[in-house]
Length: 368
Ligand code: GAL
Ligand code: CA
Image (cartoon, rainbow, N blue to C red; front, top):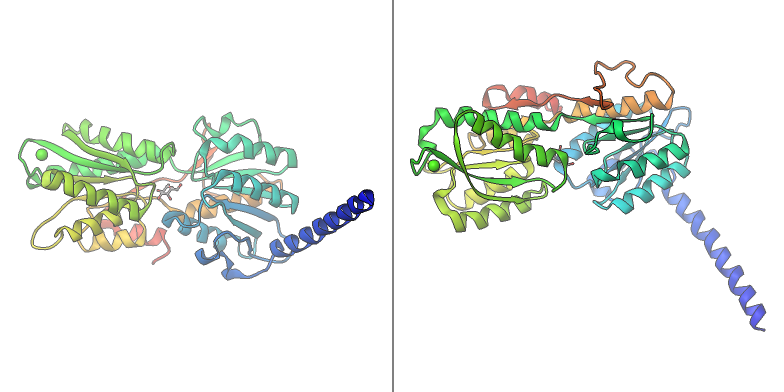
């Protein structure tokens, strides 16, 4: 009897497995819906095109709920239109979720991968999976800290920026404005008392922006005092919380706010407004990086001092075109106006953005 029960149980379990598999496959089958890549679709797969003669490109974004990556993601969707079948995944800021998504895409037979890592250090793990499946992988936005050339896979590349450049440009923008505005040295001690809001710890962009912005300011002969420095994880709400706390603690000792991205700068501006800034001549210089449209509006309105353009259209487009080339066994750069550096990376230049050249940033974000 026991034996029969055991057998029955096994049969039921195995059937359950089959049923489970079947419904799972159905769920992740390409849908062809173009609007599926919206932020509201968090966590679900979506596919750009149902035709099978075009290369299938599997994409993961570290999390959909990120301002800048949303623009990059949309640029990818546009670049894929008519050229590739795109499978887009929200890794929900969880590396093991991302690893699973990569396994699923490989089992679905994708021809290449575009990966925005959650943890930059996980690049070799993903590259091993791609290598075992014999498909190319393009990493984007979060660079393997040792360099993509140190990953043991010939078919792996990186598309992003030169992180240091964003720090240098931000520092230059701040130094120039500081020299033009002696009144910003509120306590008249000849030094710049600043607060720093950083992006994710361990993120090459966050580390470089934090370091090189201040180094550049100092290299311009400006003395600085760091009043506060903390991570706001690229996030507006966290930026607002930090700034509110610091305004309570440091009050008008703060003379400059450096943010690793615009998302956090938007939060900072909200906190400052709530404290009476940006009305009745009460001003605080705030800078960010990315040049997202909301920040451009604040620059236009003389609220934010400036930002650094991080070009999402080119980063999105180049990564998809490289993934298509690699999938078709062509030269990875075919048809592209970019070069690979010695670390197998394509680096899209950053640009300083102030009220004088907002048009450049608007164009890069497809606003003009
Ligand atoms: C940076 C960008 C940030 C955030 C981050 C995500 O390049 O400036 O705003 O999107 O990438 O990895
Ligand atoms: Ca001062």
